Image (cartoon, rainbow over all chains, first blue to last red; front, side, top):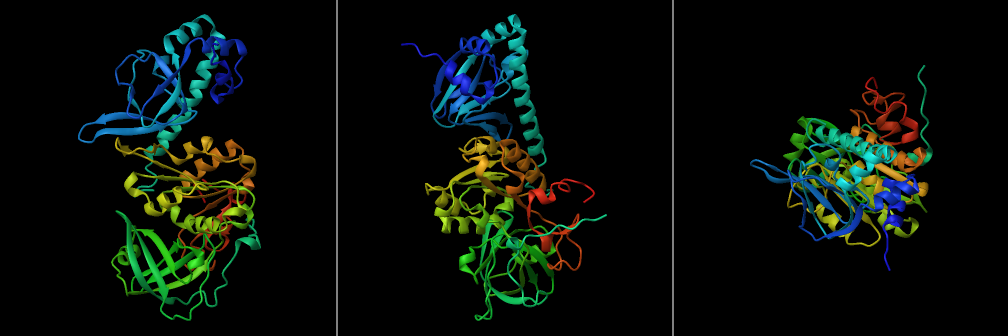
Length: 154
Length: 290
C-alpha cells in the first residue's frame, strides 16, 4: 500500500489554505527523510536543490568564523522550514545545516518545484507568498539579535 | 489630559510599616551566577523581623555610604525572611554591592510594587517568558506555581539569554527540567557548535510552545524590546491581551510613588507596577516620549 504525503502537507501550517490541486503538485516533489544527530544536511556553497519541513527534531544552521570556529547562527525545530536558497539564483546554500538530534523531515525537490511554479504561476505565487512570510519573520529575528538585547547596551 | 490607571487590589501586597526606613540585613552568601551577575542571600539582623513578599515585588537595597538601588526579589516566598536578590554589575551601587562579603550588612526597604497574578493563573496554562536577567523576578512565581502545581494546567518556561554561559540558575533549571510537569525551553542569541540547544530570539519559540492560547496566562520579564516582540507573538497566537502580564523597569528611587522618578505615562512603576497587565499599558509601551 502506498502512502502519499498529501495528508501531512494539508495539516501543516505552512500549506494552510492552499488549493488541493497545488497540494497534489507539491506532494509529487516531496519525500520523507531522516537525519541522525550530527548528520550534515547541506554544506555552504553546495547546490541548493531542496528545502525541508522539519516534522520532529532540531537542526542547526552554522557558519565558520575565523578564530571562532564553527558557530551556530540559528536553530530550527518542529514544524519549521529549513532552506530558501533553492528559490533564488545562484541556487547555492549560504550556510551549513546539521542535525542536532534525530530529525524527521519532509524534503522537497527544489528543481521540480521551480519547474512547476514556472508552469503554474498561481502555485508560484502561493509558494513565494509563504516563503516571503518566513523571510520577513527571520529578518525580524535577526534585527532583534543585532540589538544584543541582553548585553551591556540594552 | 492625563488619565489614571487603577491597580486592582489583587495586584498589591505587602504593607510596609515605615517605607522609608531601611531594615538592616546581613549577607549570608554571595553567589556568582554568571560573569557579571551575582545573587545576595540575606537575613534580617533582628531575628524577630517579620518579612513577607509576593512574587514579582522588589526591594530597595541600600549599600551604606554608596547608595540605594531597586532589585526584584528572586527567592522563594515560602522561604521568607530569607531573601535572595540577583543583579548585574551595572553601576556604582551594584559595583560596591559586588564587593560585599558574607557577614556584611546592607539596608532593605520593601517589599514594594505589584506582583505576578499567580492566583488568576489557576485552572489555566501558564507560560512564563524570560529574557536575560528577567528570569530573576519570575523565579518566585515559578516557586509558587510549582508549590501549588495541581492548581494549574501546563506550565511552560521559555528562557532566552545571550550565550549558554549567561544562563541564570542553571542547576535549578536542570532540576526543574527533570520534572515531567514543567516544560522548559531555553534559547541563546549565539553559541559555539558544541551547544546542543536552541539558538534564536525567545519570541520565535512562542508559535510552537505547548500551551492552549485560549486558556493561557502569560508572564513576561526581560528587556523592553524583547517584551514588546514577545507580546506581539502571544497576541498572534491568540492569547488574550488582558491575560498577558509584564514587569517593567524604570529608574525607581523612593519606591512609594512620591518622587516621580519612575513615572511611566500616567503610572509610577514603583507603585502601580512593576507588574502590569499588558492591556493597561499597551498604549504607552514602546513610545519613545514616555
